[in-house]
Image 1 (cartoon, rainbow, N blue to C red):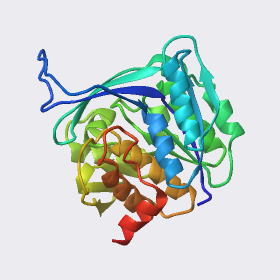
Image 2 (tube, rainbow, N blue to C red; image 1 turned 45 degrees about the vertical axis):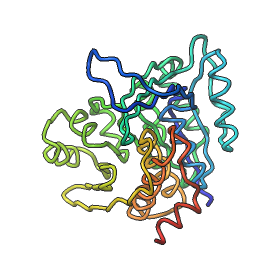
Image 3 (cartoon, rainbow, N blue to C red; image 1 turned 90 degrees about the horizontal axis):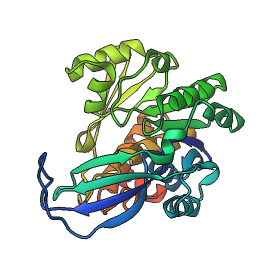
Length: 300
């Protein structure tokens, strides 16, 4: 695979506890042993793209702590170019994650150094521009950085994908740039400000001149483009332990396939297969599959 993916995104450390059930508001639940894993939506998506065979370059920020060093080493070990990751004074981003018995989770994120990204990321994106390159970003970094990254990609003739997670209203200036959007149903209704998912999708598809891919977990994905709708079935997960990185896996593999010239349909099918494989291990990245494993799942 020869595709190139530029990720503009977050780098976190994940603190994960498994519990017999997730706590209700105001409740304390005893869990198991604390596990610490490298994470962050941007970093996870970069790893998924790299394992899917893409050449990946990362634009982001870490703190001046040991967690930042560990996070950067983990990305470099995956073959990701981290030369454009800045080191800021202060902490690296962190996520506190509780995982229930069916792999469901609750997550709270402290942005740390991720919050320092600004519209200046556009310069780095423009410097890395290349034919067929896909720019991938998400909302764990400031919206100004997301809009700037997508704007630079558009100006350079590159395709861009925005994973609008965590859920956030989507500004008109972002929609005008026409990136591919990959919300889940909650992110869809928050993004457009309409509690009816079907109506929200109709409105969003009418306002953006690009595909909207609504991820639906085990059910697969629904792709809306203008008036058109196409459904892509999910793949049965061999085992479900932790769903934390499934969405990130979907986005990283989608970007990797598109950067290699695949059709949107084939890219969504590959991303669905990869997402189902990713939930079989604890931690966002532990279950992320290789390109060979994804292709084997597609063949089945």
